[in-house]
Amino acid sequence: MILQRRNRILRQSPAIRAMVAETLVKPSDFIAPLFIDEGQNTATEIASMPGYYRRSVDLTVKEVKELWSMGIRCVLLFIKCKDELKDNTGKEAWNRNGLMQRSIRAIKDAVPEMVVMTDVALDPYSSYGHDGIVKNNEILNDETVEALVKMSISHAQAGADFVAPSDMMDGRIGAIRNGLEEENFTKTGIMSYSAKYASCFYGPFRDALDSAPGFGDKKTYQMDPANRLEAVKETMIDVEEGADIVMVKPAMAYLDIIREIKNSVEVPVSAYQVSGEYAMIKAAAKMGWLNEEKAIIECLTSIKRAGADLVATYFAKDAVKLMN
Image 1 (cartoon, rainbow, N blue to C red):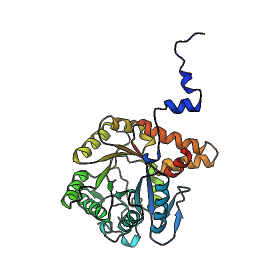
Image 2 (cartoon, rainbow, N blue to C red; image 1 turned 90 degrees about the vertical axis):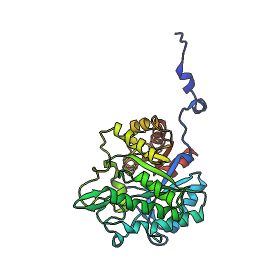
Image 3 (tube, one colour; image 1 turned 90 degrees about the horizontal axis):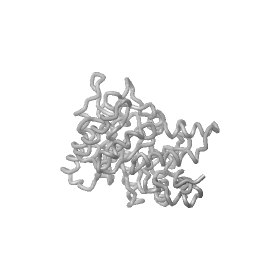
Image 4 (cartoon, helix red, strand yellow; image 1 turned 180 degrees about the vertical axis):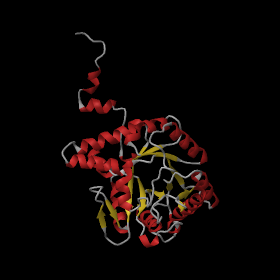
């Protein structure tokens, strides 16, 4: 049998496969999400996210130092707000001495070069568990945007490098950009959750922060999983309003959307491998149904191959260890 082209030649050894690999995953591609709680020297494992923890600020700083030493250059912060501080205004979100603000300062003091991104949404602070201010069971858009601007400025004052609005309110990127400019935070970036779907894969995350909605769901502001063109429209608007990085969330069930966005914009594209995606791999591995280590690398490679420049993932630390 004589063939003019034998494609298997480029697959015959690990060295050759590495030489011609089209998609490369490296530590600096990762955004490591961190859950922070009050207290000292405390770390609480999240039941629905085995191996992942909610830590006090001091242990969070220790974790950030380790992440930096491994080559991970970005963290995304989420805090668990005390129930007694929650209300329908979300005002604790811009408390200059709040848990988020103290966490930002502690991390930047300890590891100044680490890129610190902060979650901007009201659900951790809301007595209703929604991403916005509620009136008559309706999530108000414009009043919520005003709160998000205050929250973003507060994070910038504490030293955040990027604010990451995850709320999906209309007009919030432009409002936040204007607010930052007016307060002279011209170096603070915005990573917008531009195409955030109303997904079932967020369940473990809501366990981590006790932020499940108290009534209804989030479908009036998060996107319908059936829609593709809407994701492009939302993202293009965010870029026009001043987003520096755009995000698709979740990642693994929305690889087509990541590619659509990558083909449509000229800013970096991030994707969030969310808590449910993490939990699925962990659960299947525990049952012996798949190889966890191989699944981690394959999934992260697929997200990058789809077009993501950055990947927020709870597997960041594990992936770097495997890559090394």
